[in-house]
Amino acid sequence: MEGLSKADVEARELASKPLRPRDAASLILIDRRGGEYFVLMGRRHKGHAFMPDRFVFPGGRTDPTDSRIRVASDLHPKEEEKLMNAGRRVTAARARAIALSAIRETYEEAGLLIGREGPFVSPNPHWREFETRQIQPSLEKLRYFARAITPPGRVRRFDTRFLAAWRDDVAVELADGGPTDELQEIAWLPLEEAMEADVPRITRTILGELKERLAVDPQLEPGGPVPFYFMRGKRFRREVL
Image 1: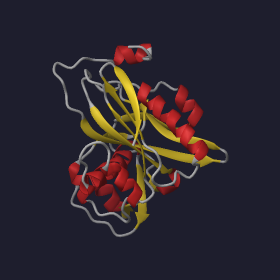
Image 2: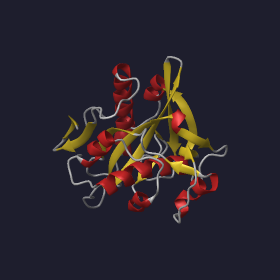
Image 3: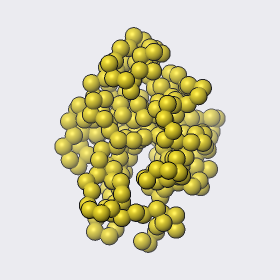
């Protein structure tokens, strides 16, 4: 397909039947060092069927049960509204699950716990480390940054919401990383370097959006424009939510 790199073309694996995209969440974690921005990236395990051996942001499928996790602070109203008006019916609970899934996946894949110190109890085993460390997940600093739907014909399809946060929002950084092996070679890469790394096309596109947004909105104020990428017919399209 025009515009796709050779690696992207080789990565296309046709599914045996049309697949409905599943909700997913991904977190763009940003670190400001002087006048330069760094982003957290990790290389996916080469054994994965979806985007193997490529650098990506932490993320994964949305778990609806995450909506029941108690938080120190909720999504900013402007961010919640954006998530709930994303082209199809999204309830407040679903928006909350998307945001919390991004935080959970960042812990599981990178060993970073986003939130505040405070009493926290959850029967959900995926949040056990937050309970052990007494870290309350916090959503108020998250920014709904972008949305992308995997094109038809892939072996995995996701409707991914990309959220952004700052490294300052991380309460705990586990020395040994997260409990899963989803990501390898986890590193903070300069934004420009990340754009030149071995990343999927959509990841490079989102990094470009981040560079442009930070140039005019270095604080990532609430309610900013949300680019939405999807395929209609045989062409990729971009809309702004």
